[in-house]
Length: 228
Image 1 (tube, rainbow, N blue to C red):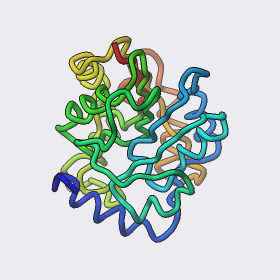
Image 2 (spheres, one colour):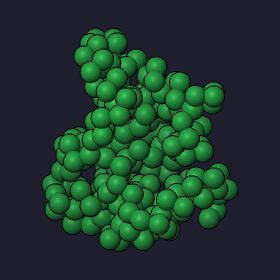
Image 3 (tube, rainbow, N blue to C red):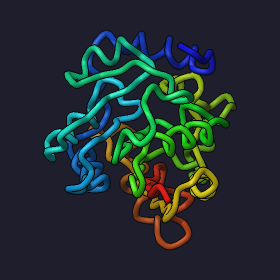
Image 4 (tube, rainbow, N blue to C red):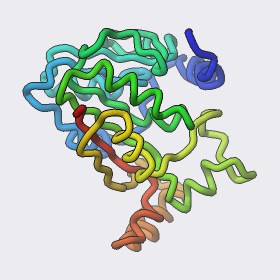
């Protein structure tokens, strides 16, 4: 790899790569697919940070003619069942204007402080008017501030480098790197297991997530932009 930035992330996901990693319920997989909404003119798609290919496989059900799944972990990619490339998102191994759609599903928050570098590379390989879409944990969320922060309550289930992102900051970075029409919307995933944490989210926080409170109580956000 050309960069050592991901060394801890690569080690973490290589160890996860002993089997296919599918983290989302069927409900959320369908919701993600509706959000991405591949268009008929988006014939070349990159699943950026695609891991074991969950999102890429969802996209193939829409009839996307050409799809590449790229990740830093070769061990994860072994399970994708897709055309796969091991690579560094800070220096994407693709020519200019190679794709019409880039999907960065739960990826950017794994490169804290270097999102702009990744977005710059994405703008380079996207064709004119190409789209980039993704989702990441919301840094305004009170839960994420506690459980994804650097304090003692940080959960060990998170990989070493991942940190939540402020949607407002990300939209600003998209604009600075040559994208237009940047937008975001907050939401929370639905854990198929009703853990105590999930119960609090589903039955206490979600009903309270009205108006401005949504930004503080919803843990994730979808985002999208178009190459200008």
